Structure formats: C-alpha cells, structure tokens
Length: 119
Image (spheres, rainbow, N blue to C red):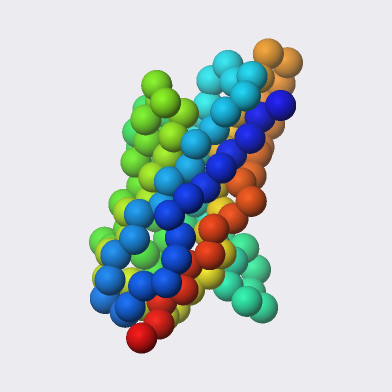
C-alpha cells in the first residue's frame, strides 16, 4: 500500500509564505515525477508545479517566480515553498507522484491540504 501525506497548509495573510510538504510511504521501488496540484472552490484541479527525479522543474505561469518545488529522493518527499501569496492562491493543494512499485508504475494522490490566503 502506497500513501502520500501532505502537511503545512493553513491560513496566511496576503504577501505571506507557507511551505507544504508531502511524504510518500509504503512499498515503493522508485518515484518518477512528483508534483503539486491545486483546486479552488468551483474550479478544476490545476497543475501548480512539477519536478522530475533528476530535478527538472516546471511551474504554472500564475506561480512562476513565487513558488519553488523541491524534492528529496532519499526520503521520498516533495516540498512546495510558496511566497508572496495572494487570495487567488486559496485552494486545496494536492501532492501527486508517479510511483514504481514492484509490479507497476501508477499515479498516486494525497488527501489534500487547504491553503487560505486572507486578511
């Protein structure tokens, strides 16, 4: 059984910062791409940032220059450092990872952690 568990969400004022963390556990062989998605109320889930096993990153235009994604392959973790937050960043943030178990490569999702940007 593979699990992704996120932490670090919460309430922050506009202009503030938060760090989200996600840890994968279970019968993992290797993890390929890891990513953060978000879903605001009434909106579709969207990609925020992704990082390959080798460290190549990509960001949505709305967060480029404000958010930084990083990962630790030895610990099977991925972080999202969020700076200069604004109310439009309010959403539930989900961790995603493409994980090799002994039998297959499959996408896994965390349960989500809410981020609210408000004064």
